[in-house]
Length: 205
Image (cartoon, rainbow, N blue to C red; front, side, top):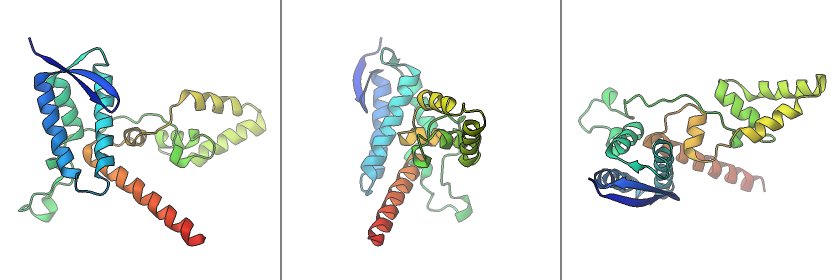
């Protein structure tokens, strides 16, 4: 019989057995160590913790017990920090830049708030089907003009489809594996985008 520990991760509460907790702690500590000196390190680590909580919630919920199997599965999915570090003595063409484990999942349908005109429905459909969201916008507009019924389906989709809020959800929306390196890359790109837009606005003034 194993001792269980109650832990809090990103607002979620889980019961986890002692062995699994030790493995999870070592993994999270190694990630924290990797990013602690980086400017955006806290944000990257928080999003990684959020993804861990989402995966635990999918696998065991609040009432189940997280075991070593669930922790091992998450580490396999998300990768270890060393998986993304190039080997010092390896030839340039052989240097690994990401985990070689196959972690790609099917896309999930979300509303895309970064590519929205009204609610991001067409942006989300564009991501899901791998096409330009303008096509869906034209279809809805044509449905309104021709038959007058384009508004209702749009509103239904607006209500039914969740908005991609977290970095993990935005990666899933695009069909990208939610790994440590992809979370890091997405956050840095998002911060860079915000900085560039602020710079442009200030320049215009």
